[in-house]
Amino acid sequence: MDRIDFRSDTVSWPTPAMRQAMANAPVGDDVYGEDPTVNRLEALAAEMVGKEAGLFVASGTMGNLTAILAHGRRGDGAIVGEDSHTFRAEAGGMAVLGGIVPNPLPTDVYGRMNLTAVNQAIYPDDCHFPTNRLILVENSYGAKGGYPIAPDYFQEIRHIADQHGLIVHMDGARLFNAAVALNLDPREITQHVDSVTFCLSKGLCAPVGSVLCGSEEFIQKAHRARKLVGGAMRQAGIMAAAGIVALTEMVERLADDHAHARRLAEGLAQIPGIKLQPELVKTNMLFFTLDESVKVTPEQFVQRLRDEANIWLSGGYSRSFRAVTHYWIQEADVDLFVKTARAILQ
Image (cartoon, rainbow, N blue to C red; front, side):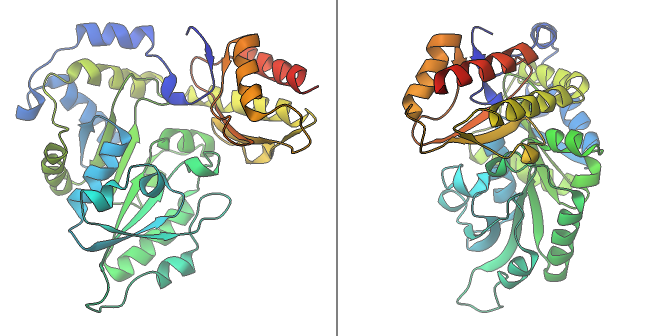
């Protein structure tokens, strides 16, 4: 890359193998179901998460919205974490386009809703309330440092859902980060949900795309929902080819990103004026803050990282920052970040 970019794993460029696969991909019209590369990607993705079928979509947000539209009806309620991506960072799509009424609940330090609170959030069978329909979960949990949530939580959510006839959808944008961090087959997590979407374009390094997976019946409904939001694509195999490389070559190496994030967290924690909890860094993401005693402003901190080391970091609007590692961040880049931050704050 032309910069050392810690802003997000979404900035990762496709690998040389992906560019080659994209150039050589067999293609067809995906709306007719005739793109062989898309069909192969969807089948591979579904098998990896233990579902019957998959649907290639343009983004994680589109995957979540398509799932919610396919599962729900106008006036249905969705129990969701108050800092989850589907509630906080998808432009209110479930309500704006689907008429789905979110019922947001607090989450703990790991991103888990309290199970008793989930039970209590289920509306009585009364015409004054929305119809109970969905529980929306997330793994890894982006707002809580990308923490990987173990399957037993989702098993309990599944139990509650089954008691009340509810559907569970997982925003698994970084599902494979969670699975690698927990040393689990992703199916051990996704077995507890009805549908799951995961991104190919973050740590897995593909240039674009996500896959939504679930039952055959659900995916048929999702096709219609994808069309509704303008997501039906034509010769999409050019993009799907990179997704196949992502799933076959890039999953296990996510452990390297996690190791780099831990190294960064441990290094930054040793710098006076920086506050963070390295023990919470389990995947490729970490949050840290500048202490009020630090004379350097957040804007100056971000700008000096760029000017002095070509290191790009999100933030500057408050004293809190997020750093994310990915394929294009190496150990030397982490060490340069720590060295430069120490020099700026000394």
